[in-house]
Image (cartoon, rainbow, N blue to C red; front, side, top):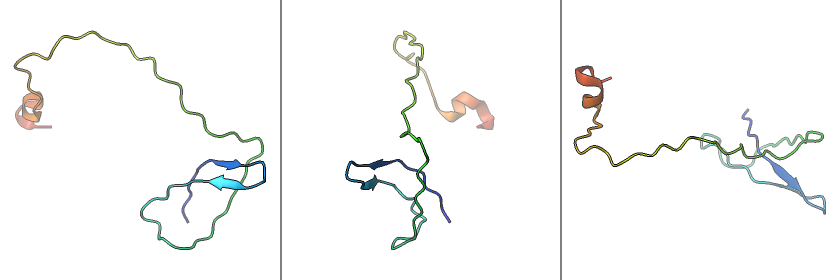
Amino acid sequence: MHVIETAGLITSDGTLQVIAHVPAQIARGECRVLVVIEEGSHPPQSPPALDLPVLPVASWPDKLSLHREDIYGDRGR
């Protein structure tokens, strides 16, 4: 059994509209689907925008190397 959580919309004529993207490992074809409507549920809201600081920076240094070996040395972790 797989659980896929999604949101739906019940229209004024009583039709339930649902769009769900299923993982690739679920076999294609007909399947049994169970719909549970929670009382007083609301569609998920997008999270608030992050208020991240903005740091003024100049251009990258001319000899900046971001190679793994240069960052972690000979151990290469």
